[in-house]
Every structure is written in structure tokens, then in C-alpha cells.
Length: 293
Image (tube, rainbow, N blue to C red; front, side, top):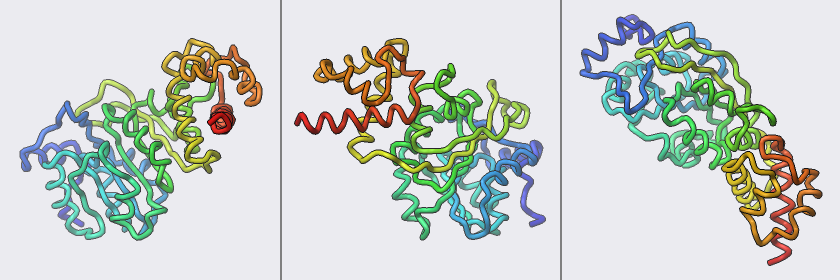
């Protein structure tokens, strides 16, 4: 559409913000993508076709939003800034299948949202230029709902993106890495320069693609998996034996046997255990606890 503003032009975005009486809010972590090439690479990575259901978190000035709307996807964008919601819905007027709602992603029930807005609730794609200040809690919220998306393409702070796909032994490897590896297959696609944002952030970014991984644990086993993973990484320098003894003192006398059954050395530290080792340990410990009860 010839009358649609170019939301990847710094000059046009700043003019739009002036017209709507808006400005970037530091407290919301707003750094707006203003580079067309980067926006096209990100949306292409999502591999969304016309008619696909897509949720965007934090559309900002609309760099990804307008591209997706033009592609014909069924788009729902979540934005906490009411001023941006009004501006974007005006810009998106030519594309009735694209809409922006005022909603906090950190307070969203994803499965419920998918079912409310989309007929194909089980095959929704997720895309986001994620505000850095919410990236950790946001990712935990996805894993708490067992990653209810067909695929996700996320631009994150570079450090967080690499943490999500870190391998055992890597300095970035932690609880978030293990949870990400249990629920998803992840890959960092490319890094993004600080210079393609307004305002310019202080840290670099990276684009990450996540796709669901088949789950191997029952609901009860997964609850224990979370307890173990989050608990042992609170004191990551302690051995796995000492960590588990602290978390589950009633199992102290059985720990060596449980670890041996999971093929884990008692003196191993949490950062050296694989996702599958954590999952196996949770399964064995859960079934052992059930026998005791």
C-alpha cells in the first residue's frame, strides 16, 4: 500500500512517533528495529505462509508486523504500550487478518490465548523482537506451558540466546539451557548489530529458532524435573550428590543408588549433566518416591 508508512525507516518512524505523541520508554525496554533487511531475515526464518496462525510479542514500531500482515498470515500481536497499540492498528487497517491487542506477555496463558484467537490452536507460530528486560521470565513462561507453539523465531539479547542453546560444560549452560533443551530443539541463526535499533541498545542481539521436542516425562515426573533443574543450578559449584541431598534430605541414603541408575557420577557438577541425564534422574527419583509413599 502506497500510503503505508515505512516502519523500517528511522526518519519515518520518528515522524510517526511525533504524530502520535509517543516516545521510547526505557522502563519497558523499548528498542525498535528499524532495518528492513534484518526484518526480512527474521520473518523469513519463521517460514509462515498465508493463512498460518502467528503471534507476535512486542511488535514495537511494526517492522516485523507489517511484513507479516502483507504476507497474509492470521496475525495477533501483543503489546503493553497502549499508544503503540493504537498506532499499529491504524497502520494495519488494510490487513483485517492482522490485529494488535493491549496485553502483557508475562501475564498470558498461551494455550488459552491460542485457543481463543485461532481455530488451529495446536499449530501457532511465535515471533518476537523481545524486550531484553523480560527475556528470561518470558522464556520460562513458554516452558511452563510446555512450549505450546509449532515454531518460534525470537530476537534476544545475544547472551540469552546462546544460553538457551548451550551444551553441558559451556559457561552459559544453566537451568534455562536444560529446560530449553528438554522442550525444544534450538539454533542460533544469526547475530544482529546494535546499529539497527532505535534507541541503540547497549548489548548485542541474536536471532534464535526453537521448535518443539517430544517430551519423555509424565506430568508428575516433569514437576520433579523442574525442581531438580532449578534447585541444583542455584548452587552450581556443588556436586550433584550434595545438591540433591540439600533439596531432598529424605532421600539422602538412596542418592548414590539413584544416581548410579541414571548413569550419573555423584561428584559431577550440574553444568556437566546433559538434558537427558536430568530427565532420566527425574523419572527414576519420581518412581522411587512413589514406591516409598
